[in-house]
Image 1: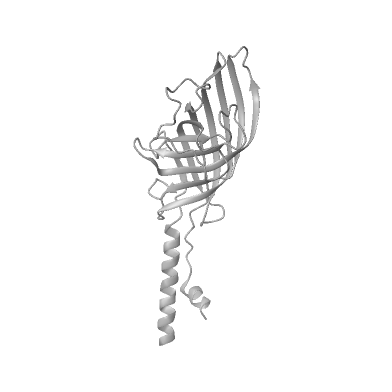
Image 2 (image 1 turned 60 degrees about the horizontal axis):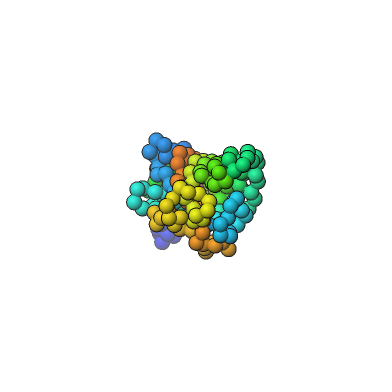
Amino acid sequence: MKRRILFLGLTAAVALGVTAALAQPPVDGTYKSSTGDFLEGRSSTSWFTPANNPPQAGNMLHGQSWDGSTLGTEWRVTCPVTAVVMLLNDTVIFGNGHKFYLITYVGGTVWLDGAGPWGGGDASYSGVIDTYIETRTEQYADGNLVGANSNHNVSAHLVGYAADCVAFGIGNGVLIGDTDPNLIPVTDTNVKPGDYPDFLTNCAVDNGSDGHWGDLTDLTLTVRGCEVPVEETSWGAVKSIYR
């Protein structure tokens, strides 16, 4: 009788454990900020050396969601570091024109709040970035950088779930300002406002006080391979495990 009670208790515990595990992964799907599924954001990039222009290896990106008053409540991208910068084309003549860059990052992490539309039970979801690529167009007038637009694409695997549980996304970035008064005459003070993510200093060697900042818009996030299918098992098969 004692053995039977122990067996029933173990079976119930296993069943509850499976149910809890199945409830936790993020929900597979595609989510868009343009349709209000989740928040758009803001970013900062700390420069490896002050007055870093053009882009340079060692620069570090920091992106966070923005709800109009608070940063980082819904998602975060932390510490991808510029590894390779390729100047693809340069049309600047006599200080006027465009420069086109392909920028590859390495490292970094992502964080998703469990209350977001992808929420499946856990309080939050953390991932390690596998690839991060930015294509950037810079515009110059009279020798000054007057604006820049970027396309970002990132993929990451979420930790603690199935091996093929991944999140990948795209988005647009626009330069708002930077700390070098000689580069971009968009801001009046060339001091990063407090409502943009901090320049990072604790993930790699970087300046930590100089860099640029901007807005992240038109974001699309896809979550795939995270949901575990529920597989029915006969009572006889369950009992056979504990014989």
